Length: 72
Image 1 (tube, helix red, strand yellow):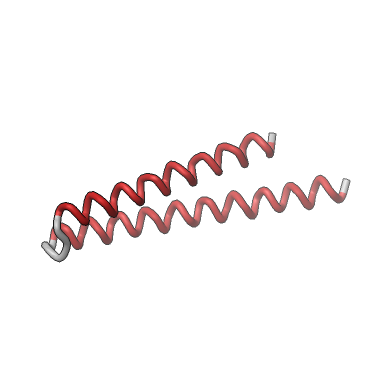
Image 2: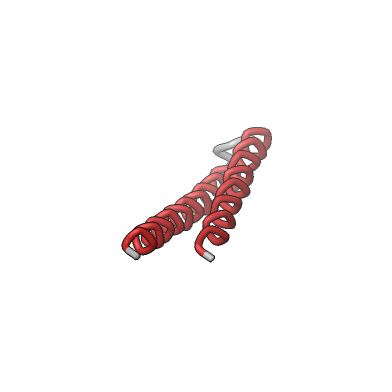
């Protein structure tokens, strides 16, 4: 029984970490958009950075789905 609770809290911790990482990516997206809007970043770099962040979101979403499946 203890092993189940330990793994449950471990999954909860991992899930919180993924949620935090997703929020951080969202903040980075906002910052990059602001830089581009304020003409502090060119379009090519903006697109490159946003593509990188979208890939990170996709990766984190996959991890979150895996954690959800493991917790069922």
